[in-house]
Amino acid sequence: MAFPTEAIRDLGLFVVDYPLTMAGVWMALALVFVLRKERKERWWRHPPTPLATPPVSVLIPCFNEGPNLAETLRHALAIDWPHWEVIAINDGSGDDTGAQLDAWSAVDRRLRVVHLASNQGKAMALRTGALLARHELLVCIDGDALLDPDAVAWLVRRLLQDSRLGAVTGNPRIRNRTTLLGRVQVGEFSSIIGLIKRAQSTLGGLFTVSGVIAAFRRQALHDVGYWNVAMLTEDIAITWALQRGGWRVAYEPHALVWILMPETLSGLWKQRLRWAEGGVQVLLANLDLLLRPGQWRLLPFLLEPLLSLIWAHAMVLVLLIWVLALMVPGPWSGDVSMPLLPRAGGAWLALVCLLQFCLSLWLDRPYDRDLGRNVYWMIWYPLVFWMLTLATSVVALPRVLGRGSGQRARWVSPDRGQRV
Image (cartoon, rainbow, N blue to C red; front, side, top):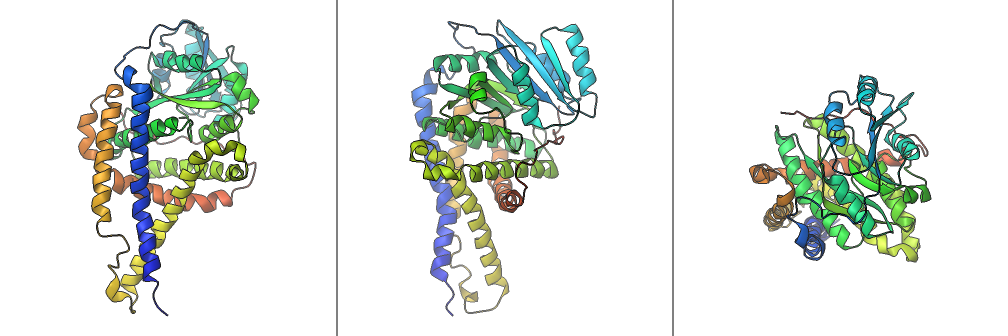
């Protein structure tokens, strides 16, 4: 039986051509976003004086945030906005999170504290905070996030510009950069996450708002039933619920928040596996979109992650075939360089990756500090994170398929990295 060399070559071409094509698409669409919406405001340090200043409720779900809580509260209570409140939801923490929250609320009445008797998961904590909030506009951040003083103003400004805007997500920036993994993630958030959010915004939507910073209309949340407590990534799920419910979502790069990210391989693996599982979970839950022509405007945001999932499995298959051809003697042994990956593919990938990094640095230069110092570390991004994304995608699919329906998604304390 002839070895299917041509079919394998085609598979190798897909493995190389797909990321090349998507990188080109993301860069082109991101540039359109900059030219149409961001260009005139890129270097503004503060938002223009708003015509209205509606009150805002800032929600902070907390689970075992003892080491980070003081910084988060200090920044949340220093936002530059006339009328606001902060609601911290202690989701059954086992450390001193609850005691710290009570101590802070005793000296600052702008902070309201809610204690849940047991760990219910981030989605339930957010839902509780939203139902108890006094105001229509909600800004949600994580318990280790440092909110920029102007972030709320930028988010509210976008909501006031469009009454059908159900959510606006901000621009997370990495603050722990003491290790290789931390520095590489600086590049990731610029060259991948920020770039893709700009590109998707050009198409009129997002695959996900950032769970670490997003503003919502409570009416929009009420219309779609708030956050789904069974979803592993509540931010992706609520984004799709809002968009399929007729609401729009948007990206505001000026709304900054400084976050901690894992800086150990085990912590990074756990985080990215949860992200991958949550993405697959939402993807499968929304496949019926293909049968609903009235919602086909969302197809780009469904097909891209679907193709990425297929690409990950194709890449694994290519690698397995290559190893098999090396190890098992046969008529194909002399044709191991068939090529499984086109010989020019690596050079093109490197060139496009470099171009993407340069564009991303230019895009995010107004919003971050010392990006230039991390350029060298960004070259490790393809090796570290492409392999990580590939592995988590392949592992996530069977885990999601084997997960019981309706099972409550609860969080565990993640690796917060090292701080200076």
